[in-house]
Length: 207
Image 1 (cartoon, rainbow, N blue to C red):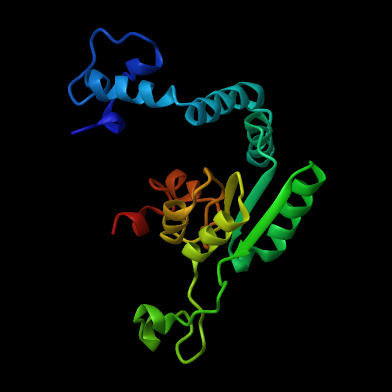
Image 2 (spheres, rainbow, N blue to C red; image 1 turned 180 degrees about the vertical axis):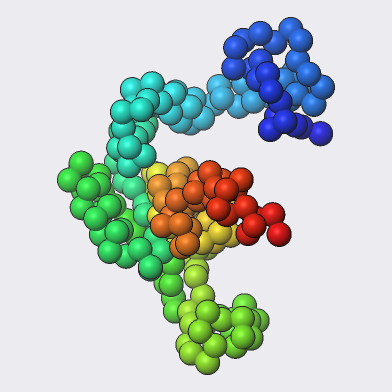
């Protein structure tokens, strides 16, 4: 059982690994060595080194959007894919403008591609957002397949629903990063619920 969340010491962040507590992943040196072995692979090393450099350069200076572009540049990625939610189409157009202005080629696919009715998933009318109306299902697998076909080098998730993002990541051949995490209630700021978990939102999270 791994219990990093319950750890109050976090020796891993100090380099003092002589007295690691029980349940610490650092005790499993075989797994640590396996991870290091995987980092030695060229693609993984490129991603990891680029991420570390961007972290240092952008620390408390660059926004997530700026860091995403810097990461892509460090990795040598020119062709980016954007898998976006139709509810954020206006915002996605701004992202497209920014990315193109910064020299990237952009492929994009909306979540409702294919216009597949939700009945395909076996949903009843009362399992729809608006019962009695036509509702196309989100098609994140399709989004991933389109990005694969286009040959994107890095894919950006832009507000896909919980679970849909999982399917997109599962089928994307290119590395994936998240720019926007969907949260309709908190203006796409999921951390709001965490920050209010012991305050105004407590009664909802601890029912």
